Image (cartoon, rainbow, N blue to C red; front, side, top):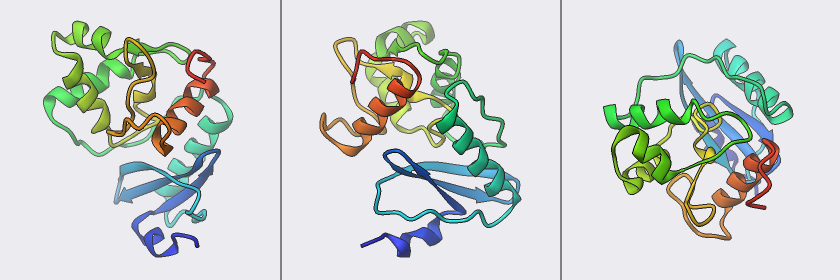
Length: 166
């Protein structure tokens, strides 16, 4: 059964190797990107901004070096934005640990992990590039080693050339 009743929540839904990416827009801004399981059908963009966001998601899924250029909603606390700014500088193919990011901003690894999990714009702000010191770590506030979200994280890292977490 497809999750068609939930599709009204999104301005566009783009097919992805793990399922889909839901895109929420408001006039002039991207409000949120969401990893969706395979139960979601694609949805054509409803306006020019959701069309732009959908095309950029598709480009990234085909070209891991693609850089997003979208008007993002101003969300998150000052601390979260500080973490997201650091994460946005991690190059494709590289990873940092929660501890390494924490050291850069003089914080604690757990706080960095919480900020990663609160990311409204996965792919654009590449929190998948942040791992635990002893392994993959959690993802999107999910840490079930066999779960959907960690499967997405593994796919994204492999897509970007990181093979240590397959």
